[in-house]
Length: 331
Image 1 (tube, one colour):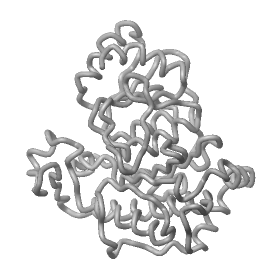
Image 2 (tube, helix red, strand yellow):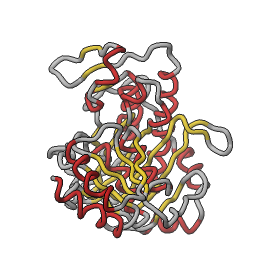
Image 3 (cartoon, one colour):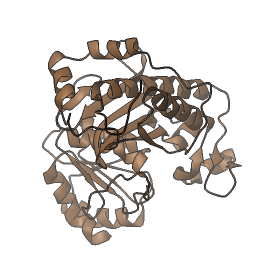
């Protein structure tokens, strides 16, 4: 497979490849989780250092890394790069040399994914933005293990593999793989795939419609000042709102797509690889993700990757606007 930057991207092949490597990354993550002790490291300083078990709960989530993160990224990034040499990729763990977790992506495996999609979905995937999808306009953003701190603390249900695809610096398609979720068939590792302009193209079970009474707002276990300030004014104005606290950015954004939450809010501390896949999923069903003041983020490979102005996402534009009235005053 040879490609140049001006050549068109076959979206079906790229999506199928992302699902395949995410599934393999999920298997790697489960292998590491099965080990007796998972060593957590602090990558925030000039040297990577071990984090003592008793200090892990208070550690900065963005600074925690494990061998599972690095092995999963080797599988995802290096396998995709081998299959698509011209593909632009940004991975959370930086440049990792190809290792034993890199896999070949055979065309037969992609065909298996094709056969599992409805004909109308495949037809839509082959035509949506077809002229705009070139290797120079597309970039893949990878968080090989979202929720690393949760993983190291053995709260594995919050963990996921995030692969987002941007078109001209805007999230366009996303794959979220939950390694520890069991499918209806009994298999571990459930992928959710969506494309803006098409909708959800692969998921486990029926997506729910939220009931009309009250809102469910999901946020982190501990509030950043800007989130606390927003909640301090929003909750008295909307007292029927239920606050659902959980770890991992991708986990919370997936709750919006599945219909178990209406709005997601988080302070500064995440990066583009945390939000890209989830933003694509939310946008695919008519939702919106911005910073806390309502401005969109752009995803530029060679610029800052920090979501320094926080995140606000909602299933509908109306709910997003409702919460933004309060979040704008807090930032």
